[in-house]
Amino acid sequence: MTEQPPQHLPDAPSPADPRARRRSLAIVLVVALLGRLLVLLNVAATRPHNWLFAHPYEMGLLASSLLHGHGLSSPFGVPTGPTALIAPGYPILIAAVFFLFGICTFASEIAIIALQILVALVTIWLMMRICRQQLDDRTAILAGALWAVSLPLLWVPAIFWETSFSACALPAIILLALRCRRHPTIASFLLLGASSAVVALINPALLPSLLAILAWAAWQTRRVARVAPLLGLLALLLLFSPWPIRNACRFHAFVPLRSTAGFELWMGNRPGATGFLDESLFPMYDKSELASYVAKGEVAYMRDKSDQALQYIRSRPGIFLRLTLRRCFRFWAGTGNPGGPPIYEFHALLTTLLGFAGLVFLYRNRMRAFAVLLALPLILFPLPYYITHAEFRYRVNLDPLLTLLAAYALTQLAAQLAARRSRPTPSTPPPPDSAAPRSPRSQVSSLPQPSASAAASAPSPPRRAFPC
Picture 1: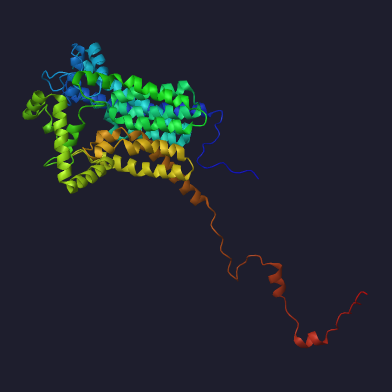
Picture 2: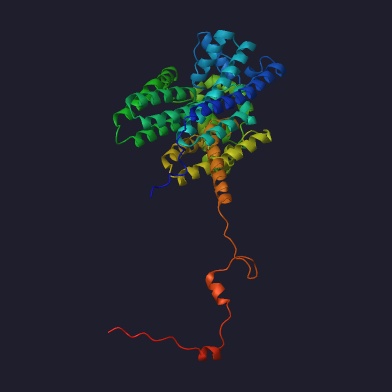
C-alpha cells in the first residue's frame, strides 16, 4: 500500500499551473498598485508639496549634505560635523533622487513615493514566491492579497524612512537562504552575504537577524558545504566594514552600527517616560538638547545619554520592567503610536495572532527548519524596541513574514474545517416498526414456533451410526 503524501506539501503542478500562477500574481500586483497609486494621488492633491520632507527632517538634510560634498553630516539643520545618527544606505538613495529631480522638490517627492511603491510590489512578489516554494498556491495568493489591500500597508510608501526597503529586505534574504539550502554553492553564499551587507547598511537593526539567517543556512548545509558559509560571512563583513571604519576615523570611537543607541535608550527610560516616543526631546526640536549636542559632540552626547538611562534603570528596576512589558505588548498589538488609527491595532493583532498560529502549524506539519527560519527575525528584531520605544513602523519590517504566516494559518484552518464537514456522520438504527428490510435471522425468529405438545409428538429423525 502506498503512503499518502503529507498534507503540508503542495500538489504536483499541472501543465496549466505556471499560466495560472502568473495570472494570479498579476492580479494581486495590479490591485496593490492601484491602491498605492490612490495614496500617491491623495498626497499630490491634498498635501503641501513639501509634505513628505517635513517629517522627519533628518533624511532630507543628510541627503542634501551628501550632494553638497559634506558627507554624512549635520542632521539637525545646523553645522555640527560628521554623524552616524543614521546608516548611509537610505540617505545615499535619497541623494540620488535629489540629484535627478532636485532637493526637496515636488518632483522628488513623487519620485520617492513611486520608488517605494515599486519596492512594495517587489515585496509582494517575494512573499508569494516563498509561499509557492515552501507551502502552496492558495497560501501565496492569500498572503499577496492581504499585503496588497491592508489599509495601514497602503500608506507605507509615503513614509520618508527606510521602512519600505527594510520590509522588502527580510523576505529577500530568506529567499536567498532557502536557495543556499537547495544549492549550497560558494556563489549562493556569497550572494547571501553580500545582500545581507547591503541590507545592514540600510537598516543596521536587521543585522542580528541577518547573521542568524546566515547561521541557519550554514547549519542546514553543514554536511555538504563548510567553506561556502564562511565565505558568505566574509563577504558580509568586508562590504559592511567601511561603515564602522569610517566612524572610527571620524569620531575616534567604536561605532559599529549607529550612534543613537544611548539616546534611544534614554528616551525610553528616564523620569517621566511612558514608553512612547517623545519627539520633543530630539535636538531638532529642543534647543537645550541641541546646545548640549553641539557642545559635547555626537559621541560624547550619546554616551552621556546612555549613562543617564542605565543609572535610571538600575535605580528603578520595577518601572523599567513595567515599561518593557508595556512596550512589548505595544510592538505586537500595533499601539506604539499615541493616538494612532484603530486600523493599525486591528491589522497588528490579526497578523500577530494568526502569524504565530502559522508557526505552530508549520511545526506540527513537520516543516520545522522553515519554521525556525521565519521565527529568527520575529525573535531577534524586536529586542531593541522592547527597551526603547515600539512605534508601528518598526513592526512593519516584520509584516511580510507575519502576513505570510497568517495566510498559512488561514488556509490550514480552512482545510481542517472542510475536512470536518466532509467527514461522514454515523447512521442511526431504524425503529422496530419501520419498513426497513430485516435480516434473515430476524425473519426466522419471527416465524410461528411449534407448541411443546406438537414438538413432543413429532417423530425424531433417524440417528446416524458413529463411524468406527
